[in-house]
Length: 120
Image (cartoon, rainbow, N blue to C red; front, side):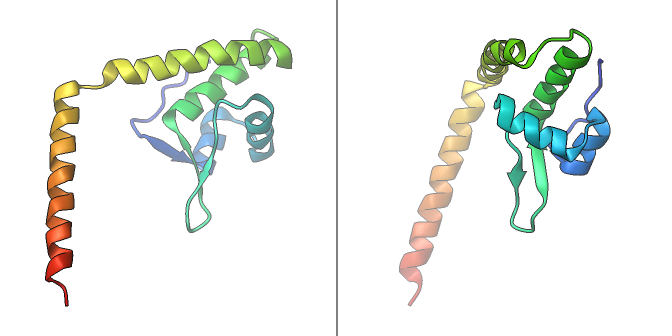
């Protein structure tokens, strides 16, 4: 079950259902049963999943359907899987870009503070 995800950070519920070929009820059940991923509902009521969420959902599907693992075995596998996904994110952080972003955010906050002082 090697699915190439589109180059996006978030996916709406219909996209996830289409990519994973799973019903919304299954996604909701897995979210509650296994944890490790959580849909986000925006102000207009749309449900979205992160790229990492979709990757984990596909892993769970692989474990259920191909490897035939039971729920307890899957729960045991999710913990190291989550640590691995988080470690990948930490490894990708570019310290120089992070410092630049921090400096730019401070400049924006300074500008906004000056703007607030000039308002009557």
